[in-house]
Length: 338
Image 1 (cartoon, rainbow, N blue to C red):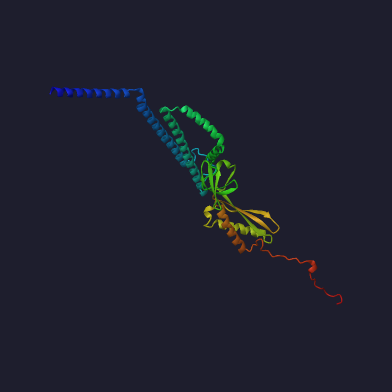
Image 2: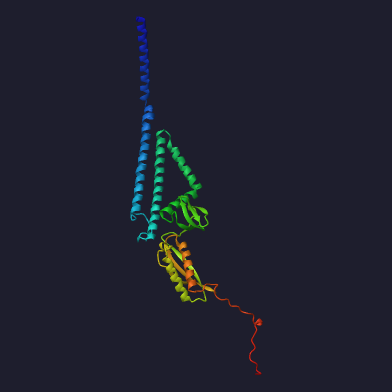
């Protein structure tokens, strides 16, 4: 009995010794400054960095979004736009307001993307520093790589800068009809690097923003429908001018194009004079991009009015045929003998 008790006591003492040894080793490991640094301090700092970056991004995104909403609701909040865009409550003004709002939303998206890039690049660098990675060589390498890319990718940087100024200056937007680099078409998409155009034949053109030296916008504020109406030289000029102007004014009141017309049609007079006809020029201001449809319809109405009023068109005048004098048969006059 005593022998068994002695064995149990020895075993118990051995277990307690091992437990004490394990606890002592764990305590020593936990109290080690390196352990505290790796399992407590660094994780807490990394968590704090991620939390600060997330909160900072949320705050800045909210400020950018709220600024964009205020700019959309209040046109006078410092957002640049052209003179006369909000003078009256007209279809023209509403069209320009839609373009302005679309531009503000695009700039807002670009601003939020830039904020996210800057914040999370800083966060990644700070986390690497907490993990013991020396970020100084990385920063120096990034600077060298940046310089190399600056020399090797100058065209790419130029594209991005040009795209930024196109957005800031509101030169054109999606849906506008523009002419650039001998290509004319409708803007289907635009990014910081390229502008995508669809021409009248359906061809999709990709134009780098850095290659755009000059651009003509056919959809900015208003467009002008210009008609060149030829009239025969045998027609009465005053009558032809009256018929053309009356037909243009009547066409402007048609349901088909009345919503696309901004002002009254104007007869500017004779724009050209040739050996067989003269040309009258008629113009009318239209909604942006509506000039071609208005011109086609007005041409039809002017032609019908000229036909009804019997105003001669080039090619409808009688043809004069001159015979060679040698082939001419002269009538014999009265005889002197009579």
